[in-house]
Length: 280
Image 1 (tube, one colour):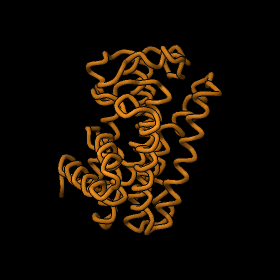
Image 2: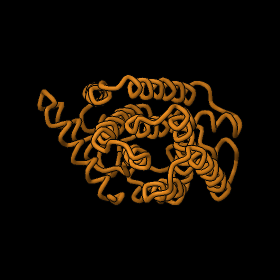
Image 3: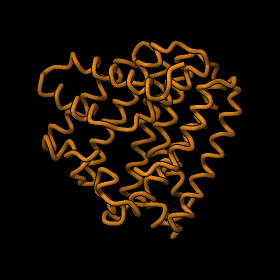
């Protein structure tokens, strides 16, 4: 049984291999800089863990895992442009390093490589394309229709962050040829983990310093973005407790998936708690 660290290492190697054939060279280097400059790799790890917990094909899951990480990287490039964020993972963000036009082309290139990995399975394409629709709805809502309640915030978080988490888990189940009910259950688990992840991001943005985060802190307040703390006036501790409630709901959904107890299931539970305990 591979450890989480070993899984992340395998994903890193696969991402490197996927991007090695990209042309032209300048685009390849920009895509590599965005993708291989660090990151928690939560989403692709989720894909491989779900697949393994369902006794699926790890090689197939690794392709899907790399794909969902490329999609995530593409979304971050656009996020940083929208937010005018000059840092990402303690390094210049893509638009700062390359300029706006090349950064957008880099984002497009990452999406293209991702969908090449999903192409052999229509279910994978459907899961990820649906997630991108919801992600776009979330980005639009954040810019144009600021939520004014906890429920409105949660709806936004499900679209903005939960959508890719859900797709990551669904991809793992699809790689394992799971039935639709199981795909849906692990998707619910991951979506709630994603909501908890977004709440924790909001808390860290409000309380951590830039050096610890690896990106500018306090951006939500500066940009008037709908942070849960700003919308609800919850304290950081109260918001974290809300995130823990989301994790509890996620674990109930995981139980409903009927996954046999295994080390991968243990890792899935640990991953859910990691997102609310992390410090960056």
